[in-house]
Length: 71
Image (cartoon, rainbow, N blue to C red; front, side, top):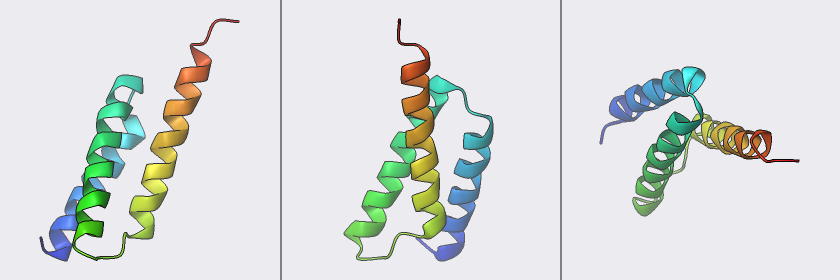
C-alpha cells in the first residue's frame, strides 16, 4: 500500500477515535492493531502517529473498563 493510502487510513482512524464511544473504541483498536501488524510484517517502521493512536485507544478502553466497575 502506498504511503498516501496509509496516511488517509490513519487520518480516518484518528477522526473516528476522536468521536468514538466505548463500543466503537474496541472496533477501532482492532483496526489499529491490524494496521500495525501489517506494517511490521513488511518490515516497515510504525509511524509515531499510529503508536500514539494505539496508546490513546488502549487508555480509553482501560478508563471505560474501570468507569463501569462496581464499587
